[in-house]
Length: 72
Image (cartoon, rainbow, N blue to C red):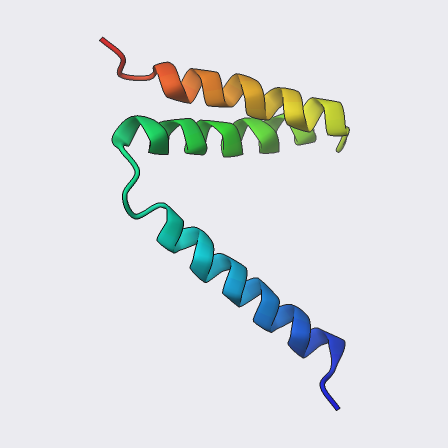
């Protein structure tokens, strides 16, 4: 019988692999946007104690900032 832990490990590894291949052809601006959204989401979550609104708000603000970095 397959344990729940083993299923979760396989699912996590599969998700990680797919997410890495999806970023292969991103432009520099797209990568900056994604990195900014990720960092903003983490920061928003930490600052608001895990609030969903704070996490989403931080991701939005971080994505916008990441998108504008290096823009001429």
